[in-house]
Length: 373
Image 1 (cartoon, rainbow, N blue to C red):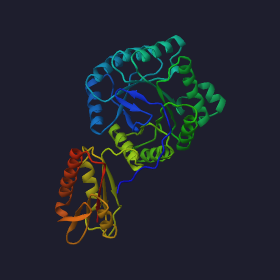
Image 2: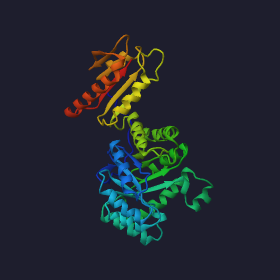
Image 3: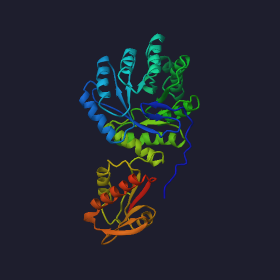
Image 4: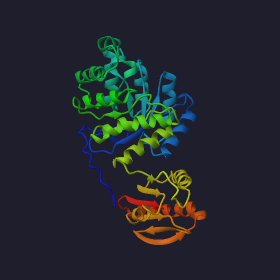
């Protein structure tokens, strides 16, 4: 049984970040950002390659200086994923990376300075077909808006964003996406709802400075989940005080939970209880680690009792239901063969890999795999 997402996405203009479409009818993309020193080319390239292995669609790199711009050019030549250059204040950096193959410029027109400098960046973007990303953050609102509103509010974020949008409108530039980020869930959701009604460009979702791996994941899932269920959002970044690769994993997990992306294995697992016939937690953790390389869309559910296991297994292309003294593997909704606890993880890995290979070779639709006890 394959679940089709009932979400109706907001209509937005499609832009291209390198060869990756964002907005329109394109899949919602997952982004992250490097946290290495950009001038350390080897370290940055190594981190980006780990992100690529995790399936990231777009990577952002901070470029705070002209020296970093030179390093960016070297990085660009060594990786395949589209790269966004994160730039503030100095328009010369934007012009430099535009010549070095950047795929998108994260830049707020309002903090570049004089209009001739903004025009120079826009002209370069037009010449090389580079989209911009306007990024508004509750922690860096303009001083007059802080005075006007007293504190960051959804309306303040939107007013700040529209200032930048108006600058680009005057220059007849529409090739951009926009983000409105706050560390507060309610402010983030309210701001995106407001801006979604005012512009047609793609929206980059995120809760800024969300927190550590666990707390930041929860906060991001609540805010972004609410927006995505309303059809708002075309690309996202999970901002965690953790390895950026974890941001990629969490991003895809959020999208998979809503049926918006199907890349990789979607693990469904019970919390386990005294009815379990094998160690559910160990099994789930081992399989998640071993099967990270699989990009084929498969649902894998590990359910810890015979109460729910057989029913879940029969609904799946591959399933496991626990039993004593043996566990039973299902294929195509029918019993296939038995497996002992000692061989359980190895056998499941082989069965899942075999099915993934079959799906890849047959170009089949997404397959659901359930492992239940």
